[in-house]
Length: 181
Picture 1: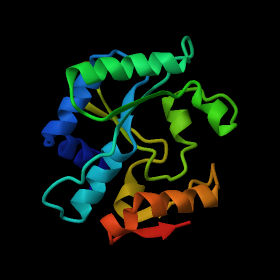
Picture 2: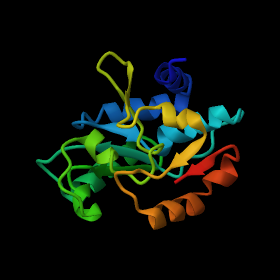
Picture 3: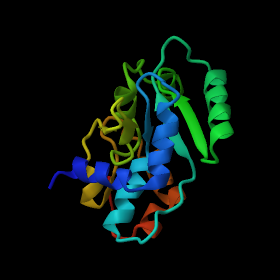
Picture 4: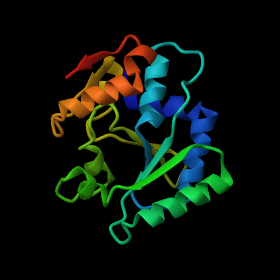
Protein backbone atom coordinates (compact mmCIF):
# COMPACT_ATOMS: atom_id res chain seq x y z
CA UNK A 1 0.00 0.00 0.00
CA UNK A 2 1.31 3.46 -0.89
CA UNK A 3 0.78 5.36 2.36
CA UNK A 4 1.85 8.70 0.90
CA UNK A 5 -0.66 8.41 -1.95
CA UNK A 6 -3.35 7.54 0.58
CA UNK A 7 -2.58 10.64 2.67
CA UNK A 8 -2.71 12.80 -0.46
CA UNK A 9 -6.08 11.29 -1.37
CA UNK A 10 -7.44 11.93 2.14
CA UNK A 11 -6.24 15.54 2.07
CA UNK A 12 -7.76 16.15 -1.36
CA UNK A 13 -11.06 14.75 -0.05
CA UNK A 14 -11.05 17.03 3.01
CA UNK A 15 -12.46 20.42 2.00
CA UNK A 16 -11.16 22.25 5.08
CA UNK A 17 -7.63 20.91 4.72
CA UNK A 18 -7.62 21.64 1.00
CA UNK A 19 -8.83 25.18 1.68
CA UNK A 20 -6.11 25.69 4.32
CA UNK A 21 -3.46 24.45 1.88
CA UNK A 22 -4.74 26.78 -0.83
CA UNK A 23 -4.67 29.77 1.53
CA UNK A 24 -1.19 28.87 2.76
CA UNK A 25 0.13 28.40 -0.79
CA UNK A 26 -1.04 31.92 -1.66
CA UNK A 27 1.45 33.28 0.89
CA UNK A 28 4.31 32.07 -1.34
CA UNK A 29 6.57 31.39 1.63
CA UNK A 30 9.83 29.55 1.00
CA UNK A 31 9.90 25.90 2.05
CA UNK A 32 6.41 26.04 3.54
CA UNK A 33 4.08 23.27 4.62
CA UNK A 34 1.18 22.70 6.99
CA UNK A 35 2.54 20.28 9.53
CA UNK A 36 2.07 18.40 12.79
CA UNK A 37 -1.59 17.78 13.62
CA UNK A 38 -2.67 18.88 10.16
CA UNK A 39 -1.51 15.56 8.70
CA UNK A 40 -0.99 13.43 11.83
CA UNK A 41 -4.54 13.85 13.15
CA UNK A 42 -6.07 13.16 9.74
CA UNK A 43 -4.24 9.84 9.46
CA UNK A 44 -5.03 8.80 13.02
CA UNK A 45 -8.69 9.75 12.53
CA UNK A 46 -8.88 7.58 9.41
CA UNK A 47 -7.13 4.65 11.11
CA UNK A 48 -9.65 4.88 13.95
CA UNK A 49 -12.59 4.99 11.50
CA UNK A 50 -13.83 8.32 12.85
CA UNK A 51 -16.76 9.66 10.85
CA UNK A 52 -15.58 13.25 11.38
CA UNK A 53 -12.17 14.84 11.83
CA UNK A 54 -11.01 15.71 15.31
CA UNK A 55 -10.85 19.50 15.67
CA UNK A 56 -7.45 21.10 15.16
CA UNK A 57 -6.25 23.35 18.00
CA UNK A 58 -4.17 25.17 15.43
CA UNK A 59 -2.92 24.88 11.89
CA UNK A 60 0.86 24.97 11.93
CA UNK A 61 2.15 26.84 8.89
CA UNK A 62 5.90 26.43 8.92
CA UNK A 63 8.42 27.77 6.45
CA UNK A 64 12.15 28.45 6.13
CA UNK A 65 13.44 31.95 5.42
CA UNK A 66 16.86 32.84 6.85
CA UNK A 67 16.59 36.38 5.42
CA UNK A 68 14.00 37.46 8.00
CA UNK A 69 13.80 35.41 11.19
CA UNK A 70 11.85 37.97 13.20
CA UNK A 71 8.89 36.88 15.28
CA UNK A 72 7.09 39.99 14.04
CA UNK A 73 7.13 38.61 10.49
CA UNK A 74 5.35 35.47 11.69
CA UNK A 75 2.77 37.61 13.49
CA UNK A 76 2.22 39.67 10.30
CA UNK A 77 1.64 36.51 8.29
CA UNK A 78 -0.77 35.17 10.94
CA UNK A 79 -2.69 38.44 10.92
CA UNK A 80 -2.98 38.31 7.13
CA UNK A 81 -4.18 34.72 7.25
CA UNK A 82 -6.80 35.55 9.88
CA UNK A 83 -8.02 38.29 7.58
CA UNK A 84 -8.94 35.74 4.90
CA UNK A 85 -10.05 32.74 6.99
CA UNK A 86 -11.23 31.68 10.42
CA UNK A 87 -8.69 28.85 10.74
CA UNK A 88 -6.57 28.89 13.93
CA UNK A 89 -3.22 29.68 12.27
CA UNK A 90 0.13 29.33 13.99
CA UNK A 91 3.06 30.51 11.85
CA UNK A 92 6.69 29.71 12.64
CA UNK A 93 9.79 30.34 10.57
CA UNK A 94 11.92 27.24 11.13
CA UNK A 95 15.08 29.23 10.31
CA UNK A 96 15.07 30.58 13.87
CA UNK A 97 13.65 27.65 15.83
CA UNK A 98 17.10 26.13 16.42
CA UNK A 99 17.73 28.96 18.92
CA UNK A 100 14.71 28.00 21.04
CA UNK A 101 15.70 24.33 20.87
CA UNK A 102 19.42 24.94 21.46
CA UNK A 103 20.40 23.11 18.27
CA UNK A 104 22.82 23.90 15.49
CA UNK A 105 21.11 26.03 12.81
CA UNK A 106 18.66 24.10 10.68
CA UNK A 107 19.20 23.99 6.93
CA UNK A 108 15.59 23.63 5.76
CA UNK A 109 12.03 23.10 6.91
CA UNK A 110 12.47 19.34 6.64
CA UNK A 111 15.72 19.46 8.63
CA UNK A 112 13.97 21.43 11.39
CA UNK A 113 11.11 18.91 11.45
CA UNK A 114 13.62 16.11 11.92
CA UNK A 115 14.29 17.53 15.41
CA UNK A 116 10.65 17.55 16.54
CA UNK A 117 9.86 15.60 19.70
CA UNK A 118 7.79 12.81 18.09
CA UNK A 119 8.47 11.05 14.80
CA UNK A 120 4.77 10.97 13.84
CA UNK A 121 4.37 14.73 14.26
CA UNK A 122 7.15 15.43 11.75
CA UNK A 123 4.90 15.23 8.70
CA UNK A 124 3.60 18.11 6.63
CA UNK A 125 1.76 18.82 3.41
CA UNK A 126 2.11 21.59 0.84
CA UNK A 127 0.61 22.35 -2.55
CA UNK A 128 2.78 22.35 -5.64
CA UNK A 129 2.33 24.91 -8.39
CA UNK A 130 0.21 22.37 -10.27
CA UNK A 131 -2.11 21.89 -7.27
CA UNK A 132 -0.63 18.51 -6.35
CA UNK A 133 -0.27 17.73 -2.64
CA UNK A 134 3.38 17.39 -1.65
CA UNK A 135 4.24 15.46 1.51
CA UNK A 136 7.20 16.60 3.65
CA UNK A 137 8.28 13.86 6.04
CA UNK A 138 11.87 13.49 7.23
CA UNK A 139 11.04 10.08 8.76
CA UNK A 140 8.64 9.04 6.02
CA UNK A 141 4.92 8.51 6.56
CA UNK A 142 4.89 4.83 7.54
CA UNK A 143 5.20 5.59 11.29
CA UNK A 144 1.79 7.30 11.12
CA UNK A 145 0.28 3.98 10.05
CA UNK A 146 1.97 1.95 12.78
CA UNK A 147 -0.44 3.16 15.52
CA UNK A 148 2.52 4.48 17.49
CA UNK A 149 3.68 7.70 19.13
CA UNK A 150 7.45 7.51 18.93
CA UNK A 151 10.13 9.48 20.76
CA UNK A 152 12.44 11.03 18.17
CA UNK A 153 15.92 9.48 18.60
CA UNK A 154 17.43 12.76 17.32
CA UNK A 155 15.75 14.62 20.20
CA UNK A 156 15.53 12.11 23.06
CA UNK A 157 13.81 14.43 25.53
CA UNK A 158 11.71 11.86 27.34
CA UNK A 159 10.22 14.36 29.81
CA UNK A 160 9.04 16.66 26.98
CA UNK A 161 7.76 13.66 25.05
CA UNK A 162 5.78 12.25 27.98
CA UNK A 163 4.34 15.70 28.78
CA UNK A 164 3.18 16.13 25.18
CA UNK A 165 1.56 12.68 25.06
CA UNK A 166 -0.24 13.41 28.33
CA UNK A 167 -1.22 17.05 27.66
CA UNK A 168 -2.40 16.44 24.12
CA UNK A 169 -4.40 13.38 25.27
CA UNK A 170 -3.51 11.41 22.14
CA UNK A 171 -4.07 8.03 23.77
CA UNK A 172 -7.53 9.08 24.93
CA UNK A 173 -8.49 10.55 21.55
CA UNK A 174 -7.02 7.68 19.49
CA UNK A 175 -7.14 4.64 21.81
CA UNK A 176 -5.47 2.22 19.36
CA UNK A 177 -2.19 4.17 19.65
CA UNK A 178 0.75 2.82 21.62
CA UNK A 179 3.62 4.87 23.02
CA UNK A 180 6.91 3.74 21.48
CA UNK A 181 9.59 5.49 23.53
